[in-house]
Length: 280
Image (cartoon, rainbow, N blue to C red; front, side, top):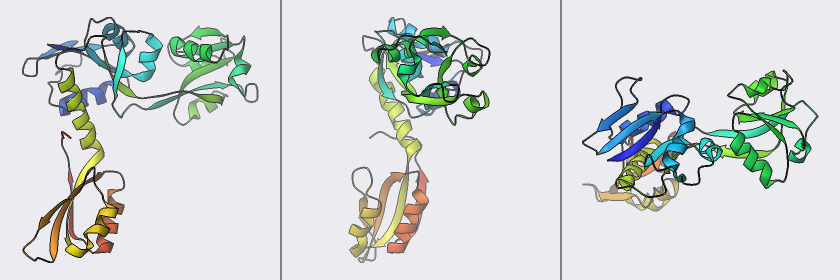
């Protein structure tokens, strides 16, 4: 059986579980369950702390897992490798400090930097040749400067509002653009390809829709410029030889603008259908 690590809590947990269920796997019925067997799909799920998943997978104790790229890099497990980005759980890591005190990473030389990701930050600063005194904390690092524990922080930033409220300003380059990723052990296990193919199908279904419409045949080339599809639209004849039926996959984002453009060209009976899963 393929042994899969899944976050048991945190920002990635719910979406990761939903994605696996959309891919056809059995989910846990009780949020307290830490181990679920799916005999039909020949997989076992182990629900673990997100920070521990890279350690279990990198050691070979488990075959694959879903975690954050930030957590993977922070763990510094050479055996764990990213094999696919999963398109959710996006986050950005930045440095922040008192307004006007720091402007570049070099300004951190010899300073105290608080972070919940010491491995990730240490590796980044090593690459830039900057030596600091890292202060590992388990969350709420934005308070470290105000309480005198650190001179600057390195943390996840979305809007930056939390840092501003703590009297801090962002400076320097982006440390990392993170998101949920599928990671694998050093030796590929049987069933990994099937899991990866299923998850890719879910991602396609979430990003795309099907658009069906009728169109005068002489306008096909113009319509294809508006909605070219992933490869090429499907063109089918209608009873009226001057008209054709067109089916095309189109990005879900902006689909209303695409429909407006197709209608303006001359398309009619435009229908949009959700995709529940796919294999491309």
